[in-house]
Length: 429
Ligand code: ATP
Image 1: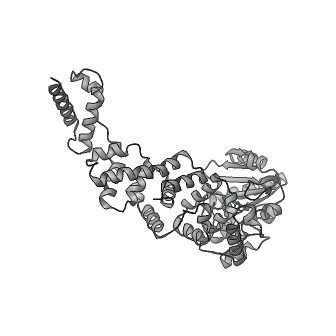
Image 2: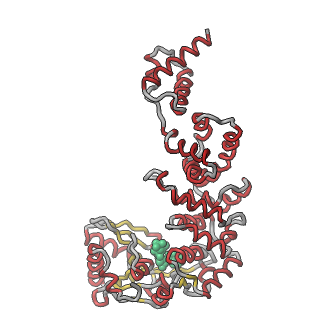
Image 3: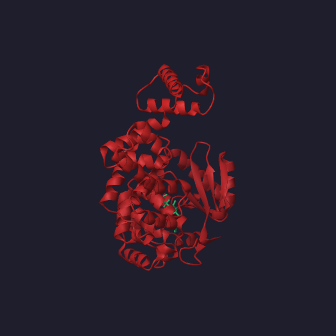
């Protein structure tokens, strides 16, 4: 595919999108603006890879143009003023991301850039890698022409990830993570000079200039790659994991965990949205509590991830109690893990090395935590049990019997409640 005419690549786009791009190009002509496909969209089109996002850039007021495009197509425009971008949701369900071509300047290494409108040349020059610094004109007279000031097409052919200038990783160390993500995803290599600058930036401590949330965002992006392990492994070999925190490592243990998680897809519900958390728990797994605290301090995770990490330490206590026999029945197990996060329990269901414990975690995750009784307080009232704290205790005991598989049907629940009540009554008389 690479090297074939860009027009051919456009011809391969789904017809709906292609027509919309032509329509956008006509609108740009009428508005006297230059409009381009840019960045990852161009890279993936040239590689023949399909993708969800279509990124456009306007040499001029992109947000105003996005508004007109939305009106012209019967779509909806959502502006993101801080980034000089807007999303146009088209009536047929696709969307186009429209940006104002811009410059980015870095006041200090690792800081967020200052953004200002600029020409398309300047916009391409602020990008991360040559393969991401290409544009394709959508205006009528030049429709399909490739703009490639850094020879990105050549690097696509050579399968190289190359920075645009020597300070690139210093200006923005998130590019270190982006470089390895693209390298592994596309099965490219870091170009020699780029690999050299990479190692220098790491050894000079540039990763330390990134804030916790920015760093965590990069780790999260790795976790949503189809195969995160090779990315972690490469980062390890380039010294970038240890630069986040000395305790982080990509070893065969991590490889096994990542594989187990990826292969246990059917365990999680279809709406489960915490895959990235599972991979990060794998990366931060069984470490001493102080180390975990250090990692949490560095990355400032959101509440959900923080709880999943911290619950791994709480789990160790439960595990000991299971091994000593102190926790025995399924109901006891349920009670002990009830406040441990769903993500942590799913992680254990997928990866615990001991079969028996893994099965317990899985039974809890799949079934027991969802178990509810058919009877409730009203039922107990009908049984003429006097209202009071006994209600909670009886229902809790019936639920334990159900979890332990001693009863199943609604009648059995009722019978059990009656029996528990009469036993308590007999005891108290
Ligand atoms: P993906 O396929 O993962 O979405 P992408 O190339 O589209 O990859 P985005 O993060 O969506 O990546 O960014 C879009 C474009 O913006 C990139 O192709 C690149 O040109 C530019 N870009 C993104 N992040 C940076 C950065 N940190 N420094 C410079 N340019 C960047």
